[in-house]
Image (cartoon, rainbow, N blue to C red; front, top):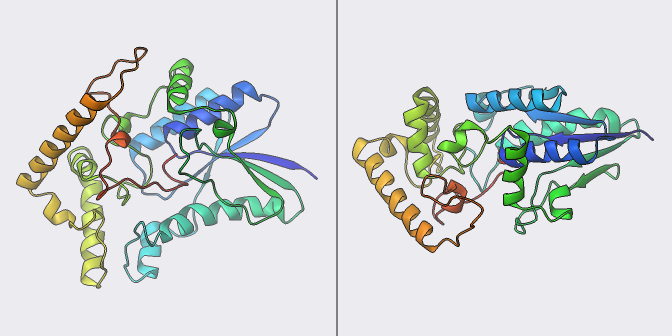
Length: 280
């Protein structure tokens, strides 16, 4: 039996740190890196993956689904995906991965997939394997590595964080429904064409009777109104200052409102979830 080692990259900090960690600690493993490309990613994601590819010295396999997001949107009657109905994860992430590894599994080979779930993410589970020869391993959790360790790995490697972390908490599609409202505001300011694309898809979905909007309980046409965007910014700043005042100080890291992570500031009524494939 041949064993194939694979590691999925999302364009985010955790999966990039795991790739570096595995290269440094298990150089004997011939790991193949892959990225499931939806075609709706931020340009910063592709830039970051290019830098990571150079650092690893290995080609990243781009797994493109047979149909793009808009095809599956039409196939689903223009019914937008949501935290409750995540057809985008299945069609654009999981199925391309399974199609890629099935060639090996069907021959009787073993596939070991390494997933970047940290030790401080007790609430998250990895992809469940339904094939006896597909093994899922969580090296960070198994070895007690947390978010601080991930940041240290990226800093020590010289890679650093993706640029989108300046204004966004996760990788994934530009219109990911797990975004906070402040992230939608920032998307409109930094990538107005992507915001307009999302707004047009949402408008078509509403006209076809969907009950979901990208941002929970608020169409993008309402969210982008100047007075509403200013209110979202004010609310976010107030929330950030409250969190900063209550945050335990780490003397080894500068703690300021500028480097307070967005994923530390989720509200219960917006964002707060995570696609187990995309956001790592």
